[in-house]
Each structure stands twice: as C-alpha cells, then as structure tokens.
Length: 118
Image 1: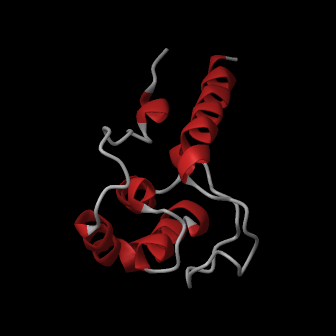
Image 2 (image 1 turned 30 degrees about the vertical axis):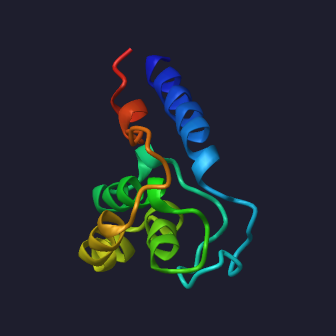
C-alpha cells in the first residue's frame, strides 16, 4: 500500500510541476521541433538517469519554440529512452546549460518528488 501511495504522490507532483513548463497541446509529429515527441510527457520519476538529466536541464529553459532546447526537452521528457537520451546527453546538457533561464526564480528540482520519503 505504501508503495502505491508513493507512486501516486510522485505522479501527482510530477504532473503539477511539469504542467506549467511543458506545453502538451501538441500531438505526435507536431511538437514544433525535430525531436519526434509524442505530445505526452513521461513521469520524471520513471525516466532513466540520462533522460532525467536532460529533462532537468532543459525543462526550465524550454518556452516551446522550435529549436535545439525544445528538441532536447522532447528527447528527455517524451521520448525518454536510455538509447535516445544517451545519444543526446552531452549535446543537450551543453545546449540547455548555455541557454538563458526563462525566469529569475530558482530552478525547481523535478526529482524532488521521486526522493520524497514520506
């Protein structure tokens, strides 16, 4: 039972955290970039580590516009496979790391809900 409570908490927290910054109004092949996104963001807690790295780096920098930041965000948060994220890991961390922040506020830790022990 406790396991399911944690799963539900993680999914709820991820949905709340991801919703403002992740535009999911687009469908397959219409994500505005070349990432091949599905239009559905995967649960951050369930992503493989390389994808989590990319999603954490790119999520706060992606305004949904066409381009490499959005493409990287799609790879990390929608495609979400070890193969795809490992292939783009170094490139995306540099691309998103070099991009300006969309806000002056603190960057949210997308993984906080995954590590919540309560």
